[in-house]
Image 1: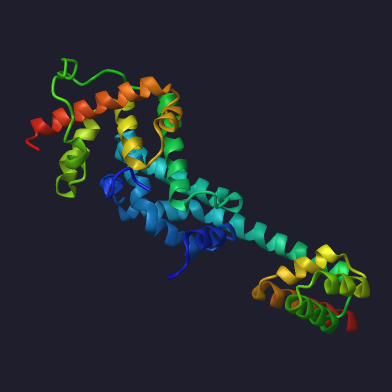
Image 2 (image 1 turned 90 degrees about the vertical axis):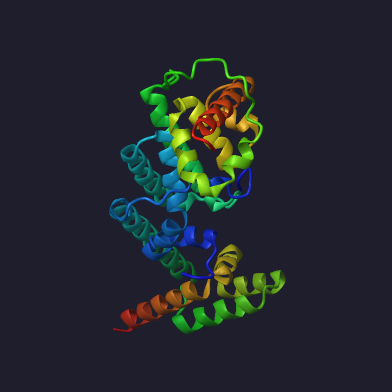
Length: 117
Length: 182
């Protein structure tokens, strides 16, 4: 928010395209580092869920989908007890975004296939 | 990346999404570069500070907390980069020749003049004539709605000194603009 309308726009100045390219190049390794950190954290979360759940993909999918649709504390606690997992972990699972959920289920599925082989 | 909020762009940048970063860059690069250019008064240093700012934005993106606006967060990083460098280099205190005289006319219409984008080139040129501290004071004052106390803190001075600095900056700017026929 500027002190006056348009006053901060007075200061605006577009850098040269070469300067912009230099910024993009300079930032690329930082973006790569962010991507790696994010992927690592996601994989860690996945492993941790899988370890905690100790369930097959189909059961895990059922648990996750069920808990996402039933955000009832009492029922969640009961489900957590049934599945022998911590209720916080169940909450985490329920909070997963669709994309992350699909990733999780895919990874569980590949783990199952790996175990079968 | 249309219909994506700035906060979402930061989240995606924190995940390493280069398209999201480029959207942020396209949206705010002229603000960052403009602020750096006015504070540093040098194209080369402004480019350097701009680059450093964006690197820090990407590095800090995973820790971003949506307390204020993304724009304000990015510009604060830019401002801090510039002020730190100026601090290290030492503030240029001397007034350009002819500026030491007592200035009689108040800068009454300055805000109206500054709001006139048509005269942008002359205004920016006049800003560049100011000594470092005065230029920093008026540029930060123009750039956002912070209180005098906050602006004084940015320049590591007390509020009374900041007000004097800003007053002198406005007077000198108004005088230069008058001399240029604005």
